[in-house]
Each structure stands twice: as structure tokens, then as C-alpha cells.
Length: 242
Image (cartoon, rainbow, N blue to C red; front, side, top):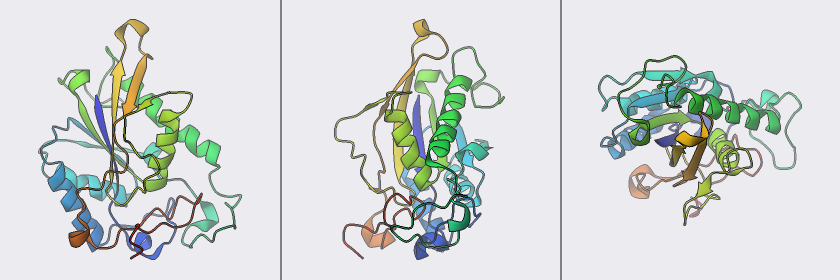
């Protein structure tokens, strides 16, 4: 099974470097344009499932992509929501200020990310209902299934750490730059495999790419913005410093 994890398109808060967290900020016009470029780039991909965070910036990005995939139901998951950053939400993070006590703790955030992924894999184990959380099974065999998941920048950064960490111990394909900035509508591809001899929990996987942005040509999309919600580092702009 191949999973396309995608960050949502740009919002006004992204453009201003303002932390969103659980704030439900919609896409702006540039974000919708980015989502349409993404949709064109993956129009050929034979998705059989689509999942999204319940926040509108992710949901609308997914809906724009699915316009080219007739009849594919979008499944909404609160577990794919961005990290809650409490009183930081609606503000710019200042380096050295740290994370406020009312924010979702880093360990709790990673645990939530891991819990969603475990549940996702369990719902796709042979003999279980695929499609996630009680949805009816697709006819596509598990090894050939291609899945779209739309979430958030800090979430995908945490997911990468979870997948490569001790619990899942996924491998990283040669050349994958795990330090890349996850710009709006970047793609991360993860391939998972089930070992039938090992029972329903026997999964392995490979991170085949992280933060792919080749579909977002600089001359057409302009300045790219980093992840303000990833408060472990400064708000990141692209390498050209635009």
C-alpha cells in the first residue's frame, strides 16, 4: 500500500507566519491555487481512499484534489488535526520563548500521531474492513492500494519521526532528505507492507520521499512558506530568502 501524505494549501495565517494549531483558518486564494496545482500533479494517481484532518484548510485541499477522482469519498479524522498550541495560536512564535503549558505536549502529540497510524494500519489488515474506521472494504488488494491523507506541517514532521522511530522502525529510501521543509501541499510518500505470516500487527514500511515540492514551480507559485506551527525551530522561508 502506498500512502500519499500531503500538507494543506496556504492560509492567510501561513502567509503571515501566524501559528494556527487547532484554529480553523480556511485556505486563501493562493492556497486554492496550490491545491489545484497539486490536483493536476496527482490526477493520474489511482487513489482508492482519501482521508483528511477535520480542519477546513486540510479538508478543502483534499476536496480540490478529489475533484479529479469521481466518486471517492473523503473520510474526516480529528486524529489528523495539527498540534494544539494553546495560547500561542493566533500569534507569531518568538525563538527562545518555548511552548506554553496549555499547548499539547510534544510527547502527547507524537502519541496521538502514532495512535492514528496504528488504527489506520489495523483497519487495513487482511480480513479487516479497509477504508478506515468502519467503512466498507475496497476491492483493490492491499499491496496495490493507493491512499491520500491530507494533514498539516507539524503533524507530518511528527509523523516522520514516529515512522522512523522505535515503534514502527520504518526504513528511509536512499536520498530522502528528512530535514527538508514541508511547504504547503508538499507530498510525503510512505509504502507499507503487511507480513501475512506475522499476524494482523506485522507491518513494515519505507519512507520513499519527504516534502516533495517539485510540482510547485517557483516561477508560478512565488515565495514558499515554512511551517509556523513547528515551534521547534524558527519560522522557515525558502533557501532563496524571498
